[in-house]
Length: 235
Ligand SMILES: [Zn+2]
View 1 (cartoon, rainbow, N blue to C red):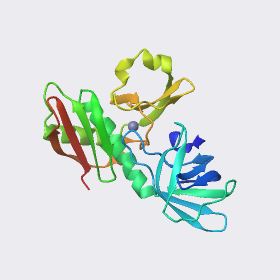
View 2: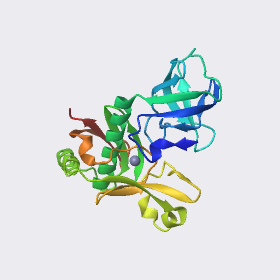
View 3: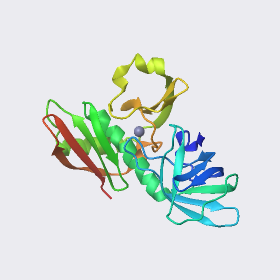
View 4: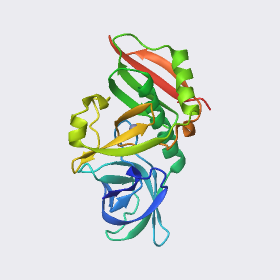
């Protein structure tokens, strides 16, 4: 299965062939839909059949293998025949907000030193949990620094390294709970020039300026050393 969002997160639609279709989901030979994972929700959208029929897709999840995406149709939707040609169309407004918030969480990682123990990305807000033995950063400072990095409009780009190269640089892994996307001996990294570099399989904007203004919400106490830092879009 060809995961087109890995190389171009801005692809809003693609043509594809139905591999299989059942109540558990629809498999395509290629897709623009990101399957839920790494704190980023799956996508919603629709499949358009050659005769114009539309099948509403409510969510997308990983299938049996790491490289498979299942498109979950609305309940009661007529399923397409295997082999039929469809166009897969993203609910782009929602996905783009995920891309902006996801990229913003990378900036947060660049500003807050500490292992990441969890996280969640949404269309309105996001959060990361950090292990911070030395206490939590100041909310006002963090909001100002995040918006500075956003305004500086840094380039954001995926790169690949070998699993051996990653094993030699264990400090690159910030999130212990999420396995980096790998396969065929290579691992995908996300690099924000001079700010953050870590394994990540999600979808991101290509420049930090696209994130737009944000603000830090509550910084919650989630245990002795654990702090949950909440972010929301300011506009
Ligand atoms: Zn990422």
